[in-house]
Image (tube, one colour):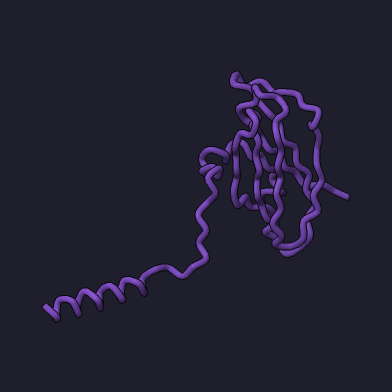
Amino acid sequence: MIQRLSAIAILSLGCLGCESTSNYVPPPPGALEESLWRDRVIMSTNVKTRVAVDQVLEDRQNGLLRTQIEMHNITSSEQSFRTLIEWFDVAGFKLDSPNDGWMSHIVHPNQTFSVSANAVNPAAVSWRLNIDTWGR
């Protein structure tokens, strides 16, 4: 009996050592799977070699859709980008917004940056992010 308890204790301690010590952080509740956002993040050919998408969040707040796209500059030099988020209704029609317009970003090497927006129309059920290089 004592031998069994000793064996169980040793196995239990051994299993504790198997736990990962990495800094893994599970995605937040609003994070989308890549298959759900891949076709909604439109990058020019130049951008595809300079930016990587880390995570896409989507949620509703007060009945309005909101999104946040987290990316990082994968190059070793400063990059300039411009972004535009468009909103769409259930039928796929683009919804106009007073917030429409391109936003400029200057991103340092390996720097993370976010693009976020809130729909102003409760009919918005989807969005699209357009991202292109921008010359100063």
